[in-house]
Image (cartoon, rainbow, N blue to C red; front, side, top):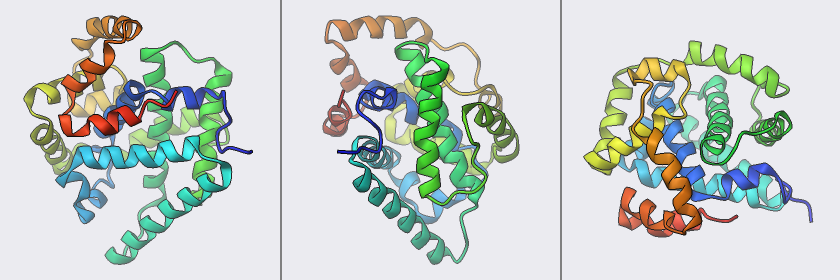
Length: 252
């Protein structure tokens, strides 16, 4: 049977652990709040109203694609494409192609950064493998102007962050929503975690310092996984109603 992402792929290892996936979306939550197309999230109202629910919904789609048989994965991508076209029709305006590409590129960056933070450095070949998976995803989404390989992506990513990111009133409100739904302590953990994996451009726009208190905690957390103590820690950091969703993220 042919899979969209072959068994044994590093991409399955990255997306098969809940802690890695949670870091991916923590970073993405920070960066997308700066995207010049963030107003699209407010058109439907789904993300500002329930940012965590939206997070796990997005995780579910990505997880299904990465672990699905090839034809099933393509159907899921097609459904995502169709959902966005409905939103565009309702607003009578097209989502910019660069905005779609930015989201795809965020997933690539944070997939690599999160895995390297919690596991180990990826080889150049593994980074190329990560890029290739999301490149095929982007192709199926009919995106234009995609970099042909990981090396080209690095250059395009820097250019896109310079052109497409801006701190705005949408940014401030979205972070306010994060804090409202997470509470002060969990929000603090979120932002400290984001500091560990966001690019310098994102850090400067958000006004984040380079120092994170989690720098000292991550090694302890990594050791706790060997003792199977990581699950209670994750339960403390996220609202109880998401226990099932968090547990479902652990596939590998």
